[in-house]
Image (cartoon, rainbow, N blue to C red; front, side, top):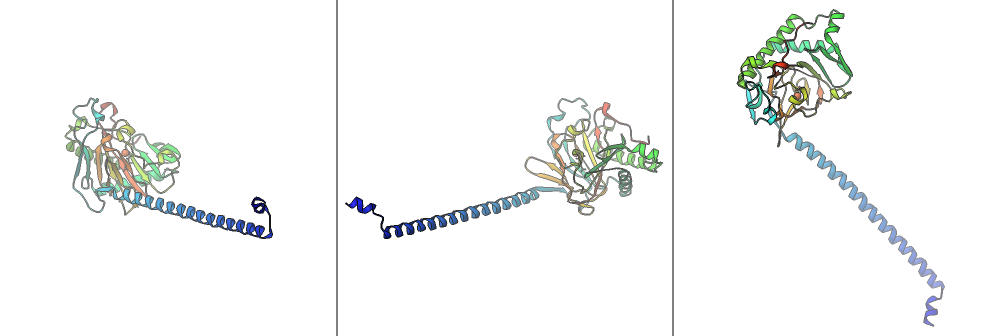
Length: 312
Ligand SMILES: O=C(O)CCC(=O)C(=O)O
Ligand SMILES: [Fe+2]
């Protein structure tokens, strides 16, 4: 009897049933609203957290730059010693190869007039070519000049178009500067000067804000000069423009285990260092402006020596 009663569909039962269904629907709807709110809140929160983390990491990277030599002040000679890598162990050239390794910055080695002269050569030379992307070079040894996505030979260009560039005076100023750097490196690292030779490439570089077009434009990658250029034992850079005056970004960064150490370029500043993996480095990506420099590097290997560049 009671079972029958339970199964009887009365008007009241139907009303209750509809009511219950509506309640369940309402409950379901509110559960749905709550869970989607939780979802959006969670997603929003994780976006905020990721953003904060990103800003923190960026900021932390900025903070982890220790400035070795700022552009704002001139240094006579700043020496920063680092332990040598094993890169030289199997090499001959006992008298020349690095036995102590390090980084040196000198602001009064090169006359400002000479740096300015080399800057004008760099500007004129690079104006005859120029990469489609952000990094262009002009190698005085081979004549290679970046042009669009490849290289042309500047000596052919100035000959065929009769352009007054890379004159005897230009080469003589390059040679004077090269000799001053040669002397400073030999002295610093205690090497007989006649066992240390100029090597190739020896090139002007120009960096600007153009987007990279080929791998040659990506100047900001970390590298070891001894691997990149093969013959280098001692790298030197003469800066021809000044950080935060002519460009921003573009600092030179030594990448050490626990920190990054920067050298801020300054017109006339020479930065030289041993070229092995004890001096892993990169150039910070430019944020604005145009940056000029010239690389003048030396080898201990007489078979990699080059003559002083001259008109061809
Ligand atoms: O221009 C600079 O400061 C350094 C460039 C560099 O590391 C290189 O050309 O190997
Ligand atoms: Fe380098």
